[in-house]
Length: 362
Image 1: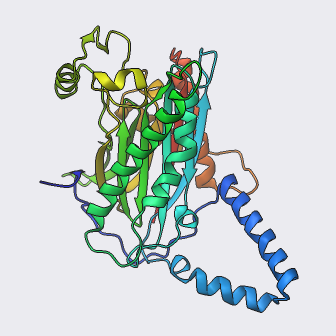
Image 2 (image 1 turned 180 degrees about the vertical axis):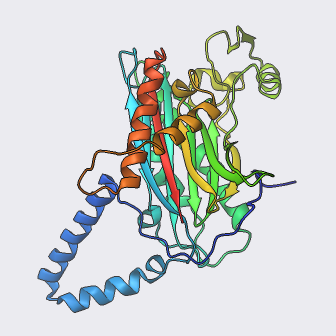
């Protein structure tokens, strides 16, 4: 039995192209600034000179600085719209280089990236908690040292991470007065070198745009689903809920909850709602253009194919307004991400809409 629900094998292997360093986020910049401050303080107190500090940095960061050839360059762009909701209950995380959060990397791993969307219901506390804590739990449980069976270890790491995050939130929620009843979907994209691992709960989704050559030699875009939707109308999900003593009415758990797997939702856990994610993996190739990672607010008014074609159309538009610090390609992806989210609202989606667009370059 496969460890993951594998997606199609790549039709083309990547050549030896050097990968550029991924763009840092504000959170990473803050960590770097804080780290530099501590180093300066250490230098002042201990009398170390710049050469000593550089030598120590090189010794500690040797594995992280050596980057494998042919790795994809991932850049994340995000757009969020409140829609007609009174409160923004979505949350998101972009960590193009999660290596700084890991105590050490596996010998065969050069880079780890993490991107996630969380769609809250019943409040924003579960989605915010997951956004703040899930990647920290992942970093603590991520395999280190020289290991074999990397796929098996990453699968266990992801399952344990989701379970831990759910347990931690439920513990915090139950200690409140009144008890928090928030819940959240979760769709997380973990990229280890050129392998993408997707773990998801609920109805937020991830899709990949891959360009392939057809029989007549023409190139065409293919949309690959990277996640699996969980709602109580799906046979396996409904059977689990009913075996646990719950019921499904009007397509909802107990006639209320729209999803059958989530973080939080403590009052529904006894009814068969679980926090075990579905896991999928796929190897990135030079044929891959981008990944769309979004909550169901987008997919209520867009099919996956429509969303991919919409982004492709924006990327192929003529001129773009120049902005300092961004390349033309980055400007096009930024524009595509913002336009996609705005179009979802224009089409009448009243829900919150959060879109992460990941560009893939080799």
